Image 1 (cartoon, protein in one colour):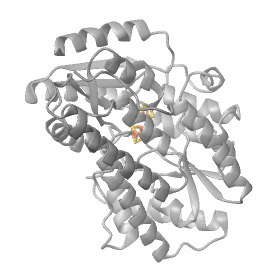
Image 2: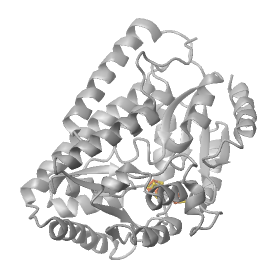
Image 3: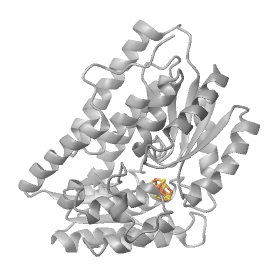
Image 4: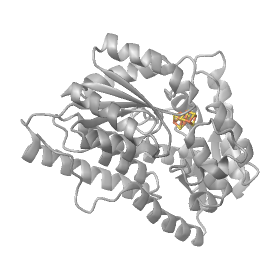
Amino acid sequence: MPEFKLPENFETYPEARKKAFLTMKELKEQGRRIVGVFCTFTPWELILAADAVAVVLCGIGDDNIPAAEVRLPKNLCPLIKASYGAAVTDKCPFFYFSDMVLAETTCDGKKKMYELMGELKHCHIMQLPPGRYGKGALEFWKQEVISVKEDLEQFYGITITEQKIRDAIHLRNRERKAVLDFFEVARLKPSPITGYEIMTVISSNEFSPDLEEKIAYLEKRTAELKNLYEREYKGKPSRPRILITGCPVTGVMDKVIKRIEEMGADVVGYENCCGPREKKDPIDETKDPITAIAEKYLRVNCSVMSPNPGRLEALGTQIDEYQVDGVVEVLLQACHTFAIESDAVKTFVTREKNIPYLALTTDYSTADQGQIDTRLNAFVEMLQ
Ligand code: SF4
Ligand code: SF4
């Protein structure tokens, strides 16, 4: 049975992040425009159309959390505290080099944190409608997309042409396809790639300012992995296959994903905003580009949307397509929207898909590693 092993010259996420600091510094020195972003709802296409580079500002690690807790409540999601803490202490080079921030009113914690972040830097906050089905939701959101374009134009003193937006949509759709194909390598059984590598590559690639380079890397690695499967994995027994759902997991990759795989199971898929959620849904290139962008991002199945039936549909499809044996839901502490949805997720997974489910609530500290290991161990053993 294949063991947990990483490719030679594997670059961890913190290493890739550190390297990207230097890249951002160089880009800044070259006079490039840099826009900081957070969520899957962000219309990156408009940032690209403004000839700017988008950089993800989501915080990882608990180093900057005490500084954040000076103004934010302790009982708040670690992602929000880590992001604000890194910005307010000036310890995040990505925030430091960003000219402005483009964010959305997703969960309550995030939207109120952005008000504080706005004291540090120009933050354009898109008002997200609370659900995609409400009357007028699309028209409202379309106006928000237009206001991003106008703010970028005013902020940088530029004009964003329709052709620039169309080109950016086309490039991002190509990138989506490359990312999706890479994720889907893990549909092979047994999977020739660890879930830890998948998440590391996907998260690290968010720092790549050159999308062509990113697409080329993903296409090459996908082809290598398919060859590896034919040569070494095909026909061999598979370890238990686990799907991760819930909150973003970049900040708990070592604590959860790596541990599951060291214990003897494979993480084969992600149903969260780090996974193929929005990659499966390209932007319609035949429509008016602003309308197409608004429609696409309003379809994101994040738990901040109400109601959110698309998430269970997507989860069911992924469980089938990736031949999943068990689901682990990662809940970041004090994330109310995912915590409340977890009840429906558990019922769906255990009663409709008839496979085991485990929910883990955690944060960015290492204090609960022992407890998490105990619960994961029992879960993996049960699947074996
Ligand atoms: S889970 Fe939703 S709110 Fe949280 S980072 Fe992802 S898209 Fe944004
Ligand atoms: S994990 Fe939950 S609480 Fe944290 S930013 Fe995302 S939606 Fe908000």
